[in-house]
Length: 100
View 1 (spheres, helix red, strand yellow):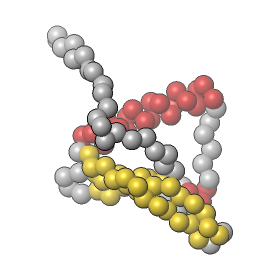
View 2: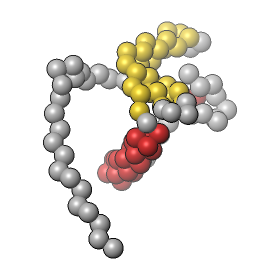
View 3: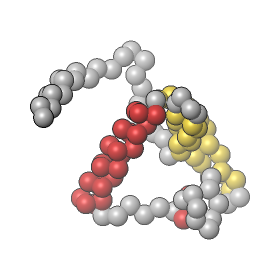
View 4: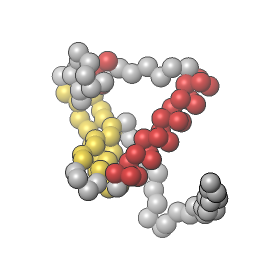
């Protein structure tokens, strides 16, 4: 079987392009798309966490799956180079602690 070569990709930034730091990502799913909302989480007190959202991005289910695959590959490569990434048990869904 003859697999076509992937096209060359040229990357460029639009005038609206911005970089920001996010330590919170909320995901909302519908039949047609995924909505990723990025924000900054700040602990106000041990009982209160505030998240200030600053950007939401819609993507197709296909693009969400492609993002999952490339993130998985890059996290695995990071852990091979720098060691396991430890997660706070309170921040892991399904753990015994709360999810913020």
